[in-house]
Image (cartoon, rainbow, N blue to C red; front, side, top):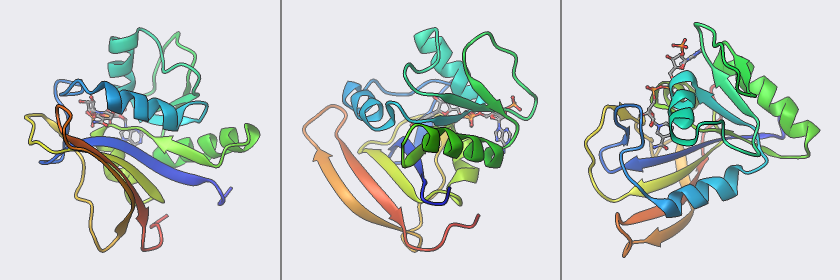
Length: 176
Ligand SMILES: NC(=O)c1ccc[n+]([C@@H]2O[C@H](COP(=O)([O-])OP(=O)(O)OC[C@H]3O[C@@H](n4cnc5c(N)ncnc54)[C@H](OP(=O)(O)O)[C@@H]3O)[C@@H](O)[C@H]2O)c1
């Protein structure tokens, strides 16, 4: 189980904004493609509000990925998803699904509340940096240079909005 990497995947503006009114505050098809290529066929963990946001956009859960939705209050839905009442439980569930399907990585896909807890548990962050400050009401926690190092970076500076795809790896042991 410990061979399975716990990855956060997030797109974040310069001011750490990740969302507004329970939606993504930008339209960036390149990032959606990037998100899809990394998460496809893997288990994805999300908070209840992010799940509701995805249903608002797509009318269904993310296709071809097992969605595990975290809710303390409990969630009633007809959609084909798994539910967990803690982040830790969702990680255990996702790891089992990853092992059963021959995958080595699970993804924590937001939102702000879930990222805040998950940043201490994750091994890796797939970060899309949007090189603009954006108005919003949901934010990613500070990423400390003491804890994280950049291992890959791909710049798309001429795009609108300009952005970069980074992979960060934890320097210090996860606080699990
Ligand atoms: N830019 C990005 O990459 C990105 C990615 C994903 C989401 N977002 C944005 O993030 C925003 C949503 O974030 P959010 O913070 O409002 O909501 P969220 O983290 O998606 O969901 C919050 C809900 O998750 C449950 N929860 C949170 N922590 C829990 C824990 N430790 N144990 C059990 N359940 C827990 C609670 O559900 P109950 O209330 O049901 O108990 C809570 O109300 C939206 O604007 C969305 O668009 C951005």
